[in-house]
Length: 289
Image (tube, rainbow, N blue to C red; front, top):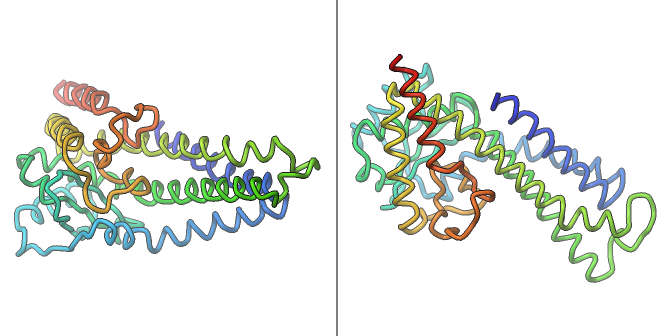
């Protein structure tokens, strides 16, 4: 169900981008936005993983450098029937983790040094299983493309706003594609809608990764315990270096939770930890039957 929901949301997001182009510059603008959308998808497919790893300053490690971590990823990857991903470490005391890569053959799992201090072996296994689930279902690519499209829509909104202030663009026209309504849609409605769709995609994929992660590690309660610890630490410690609104959705818990403590859950990149834990506990009960 969540996979179908994600497909619909991605289609809506792409359609919104094309509609913004049409509102801002007519049929030609719609075609330009369609081409831009295809271009972004291509760029995200090939380069998003390198950009994210660089932003977080994640360093690839070998088995010799961290044998327990490497061995745990290897064991879980085999259980999930996945190729061995790159294993990367981020020098940060704030516990968190994420996965990236365009497909299972070109994937990486990154964890902070802090997460290895806070979680026990089984809890860390639950987190890594969650991230491997993202890789298995190509969620990392979907989320990156969604964030890129939403970012372009927001940028266009800013351009339209400045064009309106200085009297440029099509905003002064009352023809079929211009006028005040088109400008209002481009500046206010479209970026808000894009943000909400992107967040809905992110939350939907997190629920699926929790469920699949619980199946891979065989212990949903270990993942639930890990989420509670990570949520507590994230809300009280500094954000992971390199975390931003454009990549926060990739982490297992929101790395900006402390910085955005006043934000409503409506605008969160992640589902509430309480709801995630409740679902994992229910999954554990079902597995024991």
